[in-house]
Structure formats: structure tokens, C-alpha cells
Length: 195
Image (cartoon, rainbow, N blue to C red; front, side, top):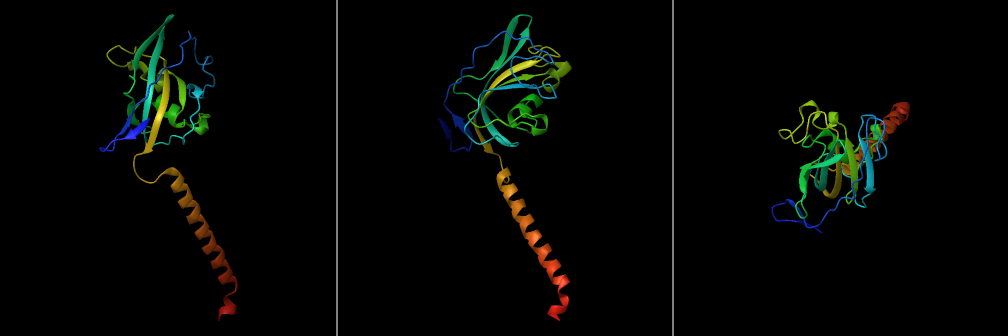
């Protein structure tokens, strides 16, 4: 259940339970998640959402669990609590690049965008996470690949004109310009008739 409060912030009451974790061996060419994009990002849709797709610049509400593998042990380094989803603007660098790409998608890399209600697992290589510096004073070691399970609860445009409206506007503008080009050509070819 999603409710918008009077302050304009998105609020939510729902619970998220990640699917069971399996021991995984992964590297640049093997993952149990499924497809790996050319940039090394692995992803698997646990559930494809039924809402609209998430666009760059949307304020999103997500539940997530973040883990990494240390030997045979899976370390959970961060997760949201039931009733307390994370909120951020996606595609604007507020989160690691692997999240921006994994949520908004990139058709050039064959990563489809998530949809509202979707649940996706991401295998984020260290270069799209925290790289050689790590994070959190050693909580995430340097050069560590991370695995996340992310459920998108809601997404709302943060301002400006929505992408679908922009596309329709450009299409209308192209139609009008095309009409004037044809009309101008017709007039120039038939100038003698108007004299």
C-alpha cells in the first residue's frame, strides 16, 4: 500500500522478503543470475513489475538487501527494514552506478529498465560499486563485487516534463515542421499561380 503524505514525500507500508540466498560462484563470465551486460553488470528479474517503467530522474522507493561473498560466507552489509524503504532519485548519481544502470536500464547494454512492482537481483562488479577504495570504513572491502536484491515499490517524476510527454511533444513539433516544409515547397513551385 503506497500513500503520499502532506509533505509531498512518498511513504509506504509493505514488507519485503528477499528470495532465499544460494551460494554463488561468480566472475566476469559466470553467474547464476542470468545475463551479464558488456560492462559486467549481472541481473535477473525475480518478478517483472506491472507498473510503468522507471525513468532516469524518478524519485524511487525501494526495499533492498546488499551482500557480498567472503570465501564461502555471504556477508549482508546493508538492508532496508520492513516499513522503511530507501528513497532516492535514480540515474542522477545518488547511488552507485550499478544501481542506476540496474534500475533505469540501458538498452545499449541490453539491460531492460525495471518497472514499478518489479524485483531484481543485481551482481554489481566492483568497478560499478565502490572500486579500489571500498566503503564504510572497511564494511565493504576494496575491489569487492556486490550482490543486491532490489524491489521497486514506487517511482514518481521529480519535476520537469515526463519522458512520454516529451516524446509526444517532439513528435507533434516534427509533424508541424514537416507540414510547413511541404507547404513552403508547394508555394515555391507554384509562385506563378499566386501572382
